[in-house]
Length: 218
Image 1 (cartoon, rainbow, N blue to C red):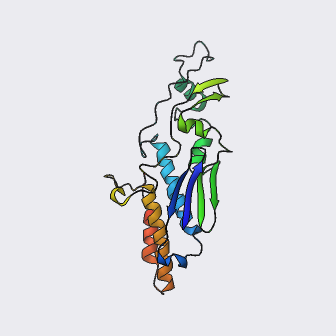
Image 2: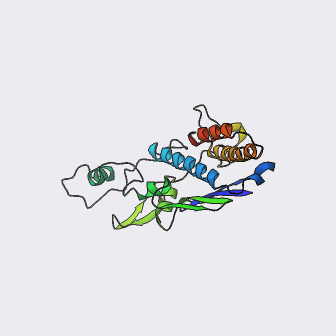
Image 3: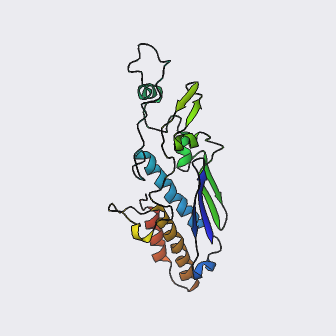
């Protein structure tokens, strides 16, 4: 059995995949894991771009906390206005950009891979505040110098179980569950190895892998 773990500050999700008879032909699953990581990064990029709507409920607006130490003539005195003035936008979870980077495969992300296992997600040592945003906790803000109440905005989220289910693999918009795409990628790599072992062309499996890499997931 191979295991794929999504881990880090937001929590832990584990996808365990039982291998079919021909799986012994694949001695190293790292090529498959690279494809799965590609799908995960795209999944997370859409999650941030849509403010959570691609995976479930939209993140709540960030009209709190207020910023009491803004200049008296700065109106309105709400956080979004201050944030736009400070960094040029009001996109949630993107003040410094580190949290989004870590959640989408860039700086601060977690990536551990062996021939039969992989871990991906947010490195909690690089982004220790990810969990506070994920669960919407009260936390001390170095930016404001006080405790603030954060809104719950899941940093990593899958629509339904990360394992998915055959009955709900695709929605009306043609988006697959992340678990379904993961399982199909592993199976495609196994089929590719099988065809090569029998002296056949792996082109059909390669096309399936290419299609799955660009599948929108939820």
